[in-house]
Amino acid sequence: MSETPDGVEVRPYEPGDAAAFWELKRGFELGIGEGTGGDDKLTTYEAKLTDDYRERYLSWVERCASDDPGCVVVAEAVSGGGDGDGGVESDGDDGDDDRGDDATLVGYAFALPEEMTFIWDAAVLNELFLDADYRGTGVADELMEAVLDHARSQDLPLDRIVLDVDEANDRARAFYDRYGFDHWGELVARDL
Image (cartoon, rainbow, N blue to C red; front, side):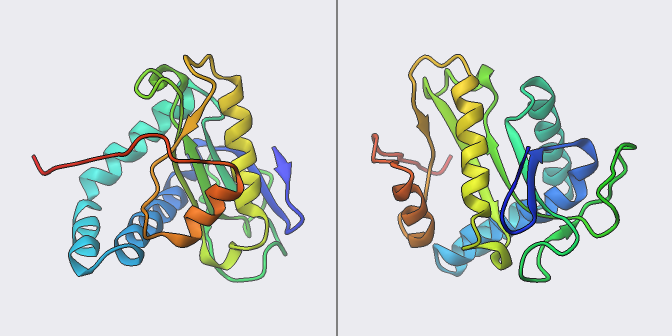
């Protein structure tokens, strides 16, 4: 757990975060569709965000966070933190929440659990997302540091962390470049 200069706490995901986490996940998916492609891409990403997908995705997040604590971290603005009204209120139903009613999730980072490191023979940064109101505040750096610390704790075939970033996402690419990420192969895809 860490405290950013902007009053945002980075901490492990908790079950009570699910509803707010989902709203951030929606922002992640819609941002991919809107910011890095045409209308077809946005429509494709919007279409997958069904109730069934939400239930399956949140169940998977819960399993990952339970199997490998710390692989999913959230950034939570506490009263007076940040510089905007962004973020999603956490429902705080985990029974031991002392953060108060004005705590909101403003971002997350998700490294795949250690058991999945054999997919790429490395740690995998699955997703990193931050509410637009908190970009440029250092919160993304705190999320990245938490992910890197967690990845270093994993027993990896290769001491490496990989991620997939859209070549059209200049902001994300600049962020990852700053952290020393470099091209390592090329991802290709086709329709099924």
